Structures are given as C-alpha cells and as structure tokens.
Image (cartoon, rainbow, N blue to C red; front, side, top):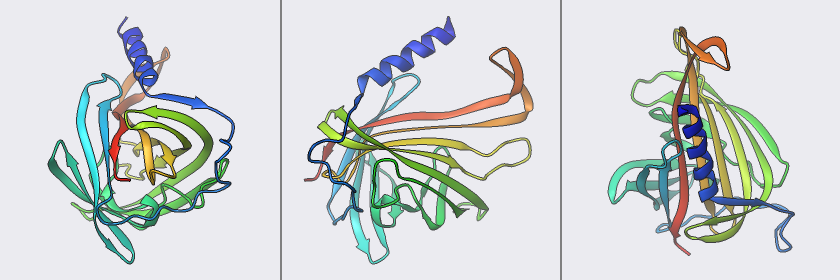
Length: 236
C-alpha cells in the first residue's frame, strides 16, 4: 500500500506540470545558439519535492555581474540569499553545488548544454570537479542529449521547449558508498534564455548494507532529493 501511494503521488506530480511531445514547431529554428545574459536578468521558479509535492519556496536566479569568462548569479529562496553561482556562457557550470552534494568547482566547465542545441544531439565529457570545502578532487562524467521539442505549460505561460536530458556520474565513490548518479532534465526555451521546467533526482548505493528491490537482495539504494522547478516569472 505504501508503494502504491508513492506511485500515485508521483503520477499526480508529473501531471501537474504538463508536457506534450510534438513535431517541430513551424517557427522553430534548426539549431539554438547559446543565450546572451545581461546584468539584471532574473528567473523565478516554484520548487517542490517530487516525492511528497511539499513546496520548497520560490527560487530566484539573478545575474549580478558579467566578466569575460563567467556569469555571476545570486540565488535566493523566498528572498533570503542562499548562494552565489558561477557559470560559463550558456549556463554551463564553473562553480556551484551539484545535487545533492556541496559546492564544486569544475575544470573545464560542466557542460549542461552543448551548443548549438539541435534535436537528437548527444555529447559526453569528463571534467575535474573539486569540492570547495574539502579540496577533494573527483572525475565527473556528463552524458547529455537533446531529446526534441515539447509543448510545456508552467505558471509563467505555455512554451515550445527543447527537452534536454543528462546523466551525471559524480565520481565521489568512497569506501562502501558508490558514486552519486544524478538525472537532470531541462525544458529549455530560447526566448526565455533558460529552462522553464526542470527536474533533478539522484541516488547512490551503500554496498555494506542489504536492501530488497524487486524481490532480490541488492546493495541498499539511497535516494537523494527529487526536485521539480517551474518558472513563475522572468525578465523580458
């Protein structure tokens, strides 16, 4: 019964943020270049827990400084500052947290998007990630794919979006703990210059403890956060 309730909750959550697969919109470009940001640009997302649907508040990303090789973004939650994020062009990460872990510095930048974006495009890369708090180094792998166009409805409106999926392998295995495996999905809208809908989830395994999954014995699966963010407001 508990498993059934979890499944029903997840289905209701997914139904709340509507996406509709479709053919290429008539006015869609053949490819999408990296967006240009300017100081003062902002995007606000209503974030909720994907398992329970409990709201996590409004997260605001605001561009506060632009340098030749980086974009500085202030992140707030319900008005309280949480962090300062550092991106390369096109929202590829230079220094920011990786779900569900602490702040990392990436060299080269973590390629969340490979431009120009085109339906069917795939990419793979490895980056050195350094945990800022401890100085530990990891090798992080990113596998990305532009799935195609979908029609998306969120509180900020209805949009034609490019669905981008990523599988991330953090490289942070330690003792009995396997590396964090992260699934990221963005619905990117060129006119908004950022995703209007995002989903992120993660998991790792503890090989020192047993668990039951599908009737067999496996290492214990430890699930991280499943977060869903929907755009509610943005600068034009």
